[in-house]
Image (tube, rainbow, N blue to C red):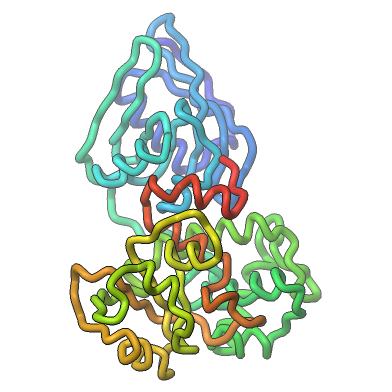
Length: 339
């Protein structure tokens, strides 16, 4: 087997572990880092050799690859994802999202290159809780959300305003602000609340939200005797003020060329939105129902909702969570996304 010298200092623990797994398969492996996309995400080239045959494969190293990441991280049908763990279900998503393959720290791998076919599934990685920045935890996400929304509408932000919009405590707001200022490079101005890299902050928020939502803010499913289909919800002229539409029904309401099959509502936590929505729609609990209700994780938005839909950032996140190729192209055009 050919020997490849590794440069010191250019590999993260994730990449080092992945390279070791590839070496256990009889491959000489080297990582050539490229650009840092997000805080812990780097593009690069994976160099593999067995005997005289050398291969250079584009790759992205990302410790966590949530549904949003699989869509938004730069990739094509040759790019390999290097990540912590890939379950069989996750592997299917990797393929559906147009990646060329993957390798994880447990040794699960799917690689196809000249003279090389590897398909390993079912290995379990040691369970480890990732360390999240305060800005992207369950408590911090609403504060970061409020900061991004203020920036979107050109509204000034301050400590009191972030407390009021997010519903978080002053302590939580301070921790989020400090975390964003201490990032390298910083995401928030050192002496104010100006965002320094909105695109990167939004990408990290999308990644964190789509990873946490299913267990942190789960849905309740309903059927309705008033709204027989999701299109009936879209066409409704009046909805309870404490209920906002998201996902594909919201996109349709805003003019996207999509025929929604489900409707997702966010309702104000502790307010009357949930009760009023259930009453108006004559909703009844139904695990097979087409209407979902999710608790709002924020208190207020800095501007009135557009056609009673959630802010665009959250709409984008929920469309990503649909994990439905049927709406991928519409979502990309709607938000001008680029791979």
